[in-house]
Amino acid sequence: MAQELQTLMDFDIMEMYRFLTDIGNSIPAIANDRKIPDNFVKGCTSNVYVDAAINNGGIQYSGSSEAHIVRGYLCILINALSGLAPEQFLSGSRSMIEGFAEATNLKAALTPSRANAFGNIYALMAEKAKALGTQA
Image 1 (tube, helix red, strand yellow):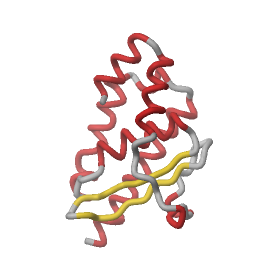
Image 2 (image 1 turned 120 degrees about the vertical axis):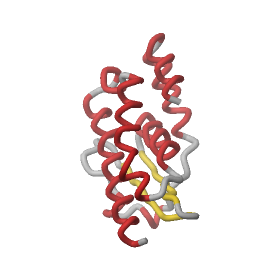
Image 3 (image 1 turned 30 degrees about the vertical axis):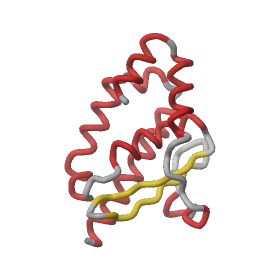
Image 4 (image 1 turned 180 degrees about the vertical axis):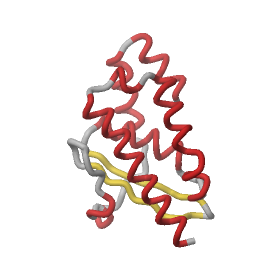
């Protein structure tokens, strides 16, 4: 997915936004009863929620966002990070996500609020991984 985003960014920023909007429609939806304060991503200009549970030893994330492009970021993060055991998430995901952001030059193509949304979503996912790791 990083390769696709990089290619899109090289040619047309609007096409990258369309790509993010399209992939955002494929994320597992969060149930309305899980749209609770503990699942709310703070610091985003739109309402974004992330939920997590352990499934077969790995974290399974779900989420929702009112903003189409932010839903695309959510999809990227959910696809990249779901399935990792909490300890795997905590030991290696940060460098993987930073590498993705650098390879795609994500911050340069985004408004500051959208770039912050990506980081804030990741931060809540990490918080949930830590909590799930202590429950295991």
